[in-house]
Image 1: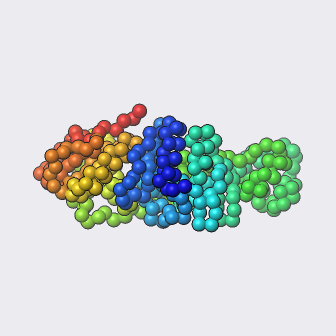
Image 2: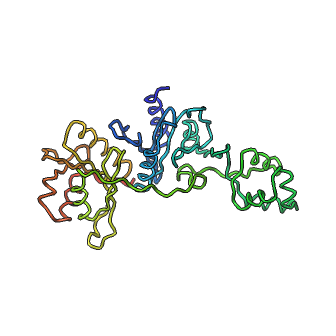
Image 3: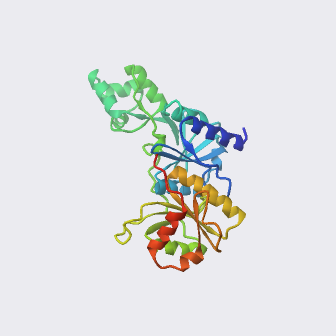
Length: 328
C-alpha cells in the first residue's frame, strides 16, 4: 500500500470514529501528517509504511508539540525494517507510540485498547499486581509456590505484585493458573506513558534568527513562544502567566515569511490545524498584504507590528483577523 493510500485510509478511519480531522500536512517541514480531535482527545499522527523512517528529531518535535497542545503524538505504520508490525501491539519510536492501522481501528472504532507492548527483549503486558497478590493469597499460595508454577524466582513474583510488567508468556501462564485475566490495557491515548521510558520532554530548538523580532513582539504581548523546527508552523505561543496581560486567553500557531504561494498554502493549513487543535492561527508577513485573513488565519505584516508598541493592539489584531477556536 502506498503512503498516500495509507494516509487516506487513516483519515477515513478517524472520521468514522467521530474525529474532526485536519487537512493533510502537504507542505514541508512536517513532523506530523494529521491532527484529529474527538472531545478532549487530540492526536498528532505521523503515517508511515516503515516506522523506522521516523527519526529522533521528528520524535522530539512531536513530543514537544504534544506537551504544548495537550495532544498525544502517535505513529501509524505497517512494518519495521525487520518485520511487519503486529496488530494489537504497541511499539515505540523515540518515545512515541507506534501502532498498526488495525490497532488504531480497534482502539478508536471498536474501543478495544491494546494489551501488549514491545520493548527490548520481547513483548510485554501491564500486570495488575494487586490482583495477582489477592488471587495468590486467596488460594493460600506462598510467593515460592507461585514462583514454582511460573518457573521464575520468588523475587520476580514479588516484583510482579509490586507493579513490574510481565512477558506475554507469563501473563498467559497467570491467566491459565487462575482462570482470569490480569492484564491492563496500554493507554495509547495518553502516550502509553505507563510502559514507555519516562524521558522528559525534549528541550526546544533555538528560534530562527529571522523570526526573533516577531517572537519578541509576541512575548511583549503576553505570550510564551515555543519555536518549532519541523512543524508546519514556526512556533506555538501560549498564554503567559503574567499579571500585566490577564486577558490573554488563546494559544497561537504562528508562521512567518514573505507571503508566497507556499506561504498561502501554509496559512490555509494552519487554519485547518487551528480548528482541530482549538488554537488561533496567525501568519506574519514581510510585506503588507491586501488580505487580513486567509481561511481563518490572521495575516499581519511585520510593518504593522513595528507601528505599535501596545501589546493590547497586537492581541486585538490577532483576535479580529483570526478564527475563534471552537470548543464544541
